[in-house]
Length: 533
Image 1 (cartoon, rainbow, N blue to C red):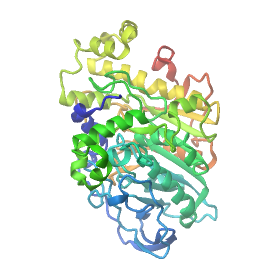
Image 2: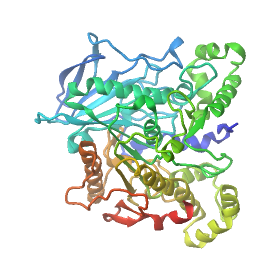
Image 3: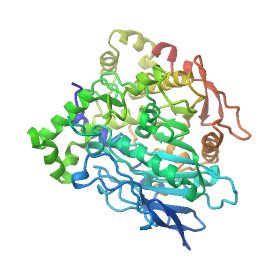
């Protein structure tokens, strides 16, 4: 049985919603700028006639239902497509985020189980007769937090000349509970994401998009879900390309590498372990015995949220939707043969270590550092300590962050890229702006290019542009160009920038979006991947 993470809630909560501090960073409220002089614009979809908004600031259609509300007896059932073409949909306001324990930035109603909605953003001007590429965003948040409405996509749509769709999907206990006899158990969040692709295929052309050119892109849990979708038989024919930011099928946290006391795990779990976690959670809520599912369906949302943290990294394989562990599927060559961009951030783990130190200042010290390494890496600990001696780092927190970034994030991402390159065109990158906005608002250690600090470069988080320097704006433009040319053609390009090289099985160098320049770097040496892989 895979142990749950129920005792690690404090640091996990600090990190699960990585953009909660956007308003403070921006120096203003969480509500985004409002559209001025808006004009209604109507689009006919399978969900109904959507009344969206267009103004000098943008062109958006918000809160469109793509599946029926999973409420009441429909709680923990597979999503059911909305087919109400004669309905009238108010597309001027975002829908409710899915239930979660953390607040979500942006302008939207309170969280609700009636949350399976999406938002469509198109370029301010589209004078082309050619259908535009469609990019579908699956947000991060540890599978337990977040919402599509927190990511304002107008800048991405305008510069890249693409249609951007951001979605909500079920989270935590609502998205990943799985019990014996429960159809779709452990995979409701992924099922929602795949259902959103069916909606996009059916409706992209109504917004000027090309239903035959759909790119899924996601960050963190969203990228891990996208990687899983690459191996799911249910998603075949629904996506044409994928972009994985800070989330690979190959990620693996050794004992204590995420937080002290958290056992070794990956972003995915087996049916047996998911059932064990779900049964324990149900019994803890007083829902045992043969009526377990009925009891849970009658439980109020607030009560169910008390076990929400146990369902991080519970996306379940060994199911109809996800037959095989995605990491094994990649190694077996069972992924879809579509182009992929995969990458991550140079200092991923600093956000997690910094969050830990905020609640447990003595968790990573000169005294505990060797113990942490020994717990995580066992017999290899002496060599790890030799390669990452404390004297080489400004603090034990930075030392431990570097070890776990290299071992857990950077090198597994490179490994995943190499493996995927056997089946399809693959490109790998690294975001490495040491001055990136501190979206996690962690001050215990310098954040650098920590987990999620890349998101302000392609979205306005909570409606706010957080970029503060010409170089940051240049990185944002280059990163958007890199992704959107890929979405258009399957080959990424940066006009007037460095040449982009396709990944191979022996790739060691990657394209790095760095503090001073965007260039090809020796990624494998920087992260000691010859040691970790």
